[in-house]
Length: 191
View (cartoon, rainbow, N blue to C red):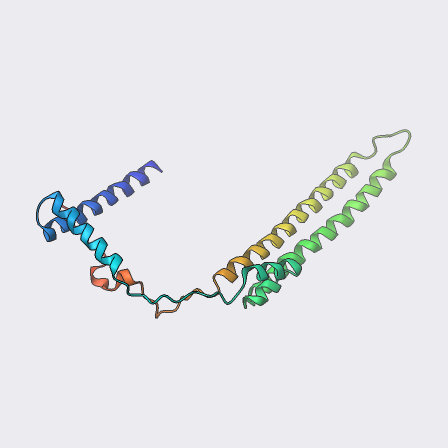
């Protein structure tokens, strides 16, 4: 971990030094001229406005998506038009509910068997039945936690998906800082 941090710090320092050298050649010599050039570039970039101020309006409400998913798991995904997530949520939820019912039935069976095995001559009963009863009770409780986790993940997913519904990932999008891809990375190492 420390080696990775050292290598990252070394690369950052080399990049910083190469950018300082590039500034030094364009602005002349001396630290004062570099600072003056950087300050004027910052002032110029703050004055210039290339973007049009259009207020952003979300088309999907995260609160509504959360409430729909809380009412019925998968309904928030319908609201967000993420239809492929619904079978996944319902499959996990259905499987965990099946396991809860199955383990609860086995727990009740072994609980009754353990109670029947307790007699006046053997008040502690059959220990195998007690062990199996405890095992299936623990399994049932674990699947309760798993199903609660799926329910919460369903709600969280609907919330995040509603926030990112309007996020554009098309190929037409372009970052303003990287307009010229030929000059995207300019690294110069001097030894």
